[in-house]
Image 1 (cartoon, helix red, strand yellow):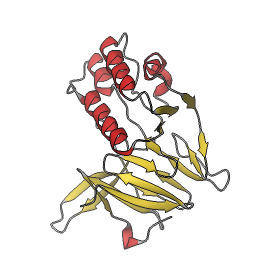
Image 2 (spheres, rainbow, N blue to C red; image 1 turned 30 degrees about the horizontal axis):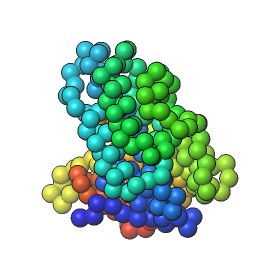
Image 3 (spheres, one colour; image 1 turned 120 degrees about the vertical axis):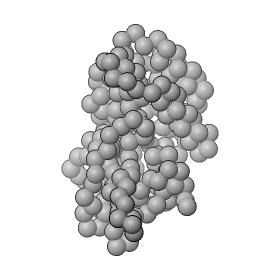
Image 4 (cartoon, rainbow, N blue to C red; image 1 turned 180 degrees about the vertical axis):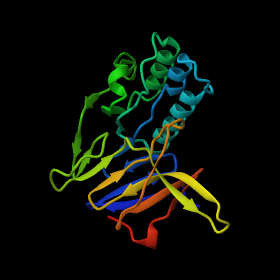
Length: 226
């Protein structure tokens, strides 16, 4: 099974990875949405039992993508962090080590609703830029899906899209997914501890579901957008 699929939008090549990331190949722009780094730490401080090592695992996946594809820029589509962590010195050291490892890569953040409460921790990423909307070429990148303002194609996160699939034995599986519509795309949440919103695909939507280390085109009727 494939580990990535490609789509052509506005004459540009977008690679969709099973690691829940997108690469705009011509611009060498790697895009991830809703990493929610530090979520387990935040919840543990609130008394919720959570496994350790989730942040390290997510950072390792980011590092693997950077090493493999050597992007010029890594763009986070909001909710890079889950929330404030008090002093969070262990987390801060973890982020600073990761940033030094990828000092050649520009880091850009389109701010999400969770990032506003975690400004103190964001400084450890040494971001090269932070904005509400990132416009580049034929694309408009935002955290939340927004109505089209011009002919640019929108790419957003926030919703943590997933698709519910039924197998031949009537078993049902809910999988994180990419969704490409006629005017905009939704990216899956990069973080492993996030919830999911089950989509109801609209006519013309192209759906790529993530099944472990594989990504599968599950577009209803086989009709793809783009």
